[in-house]
Image 1 (tube, rainbow, N blue to C red):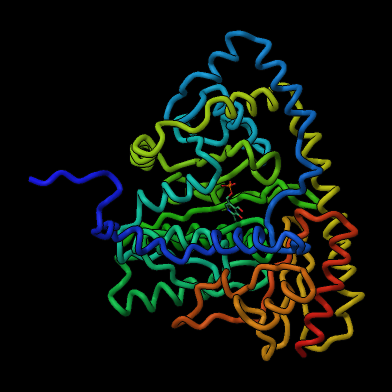
Image 2 (cartoon, rainbow, N blue to C red):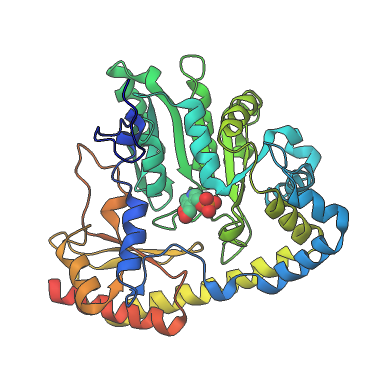
Length: 432
Ligand SMILES: Cc1ncc(COP(=O)(O)O)c(C=O)c1O
């Protein structure tokens, strides 16, 4: 036997199949663009505004938490895989508030509410719990592009369902299911994924009557093929007018069909990485087992910090302030679009009622896609960055529209948003 000195191996490392499926990670590419072009005004980053981060509120909560020896020690110790009981109890109340009901009326056990590291981890765990290679997840197109990577990273397939300004089209969902059934593929359909409120990338919400129909359709197939509806409500709290909408999860009367996934990243602080899922009872064990293998529990400290914020009544005022800030920034970006692009035929955008994004369409002959001439011109000549809309599409037979742009009013301040839109408009005019 020959001994090998560490670091001298010449054989190629053997990677897993999952590593191949996870290649071409889009989020990594966009992060790199931002790092490579720090001079750019970023209408790309889906981050929250750094000025809105709850520094003072968190400081107060941290002082109380660390000032109490027992609470501090609990936060600094390992927690449980499903997360802090204290926070989960507070989240039942929080959820009841959003659903405009009481904790008792929610009809769930505390065990069904599981904490995760951001909501992204819960989405990934649900996919792992349900999808095998070759399985199908139906998704309203376009969608949150990280989820596309999560699904395909497991060797599963994302299949597009058409969406309009009221979210996933129910007729398209039915047709897609019929056509998959006709192709003998119904038994591979394991999941339907929707972002119900102010989605990413379009800030479009699923109409309330469609929420009910979605659940009914999934239920109606359950004797032939169980489909889990994953409702991602990451932007639920960021409504600019009115009040939160009832979730699709709320229409799932027997509690077997919908997993509701939420996060404190958008409405409080992404740095805490606190998200949660409300799961059908039979998914609790499988998701807990998978999470146990990954991390046996998300950061206990952050969970107790957030619990203190909620307990001390520090959350509501913060999120109200956020709604005001973001709706004012939405106005700045939308008004700048009208000022600089309002006269152009074929250039349109959606003015959202919440969330962080404005979705823009340019004439079809303009290549706004990844690596296309508008993107390159915007980044290199005008120093403004956006997310090419094609990255958010599943597409049909590999064809994705390349004339859409996701513009975020999250990170930049009002002056830079207006300047960013003026630069982008120059780039668009030059391409016409
Ligand atoms: C639609 C949607 N869902 C989920 C997430 C995940 O966020 P987090 O893991 O920070 O909760 C994001 C992040 O941008 C998102 O846009």
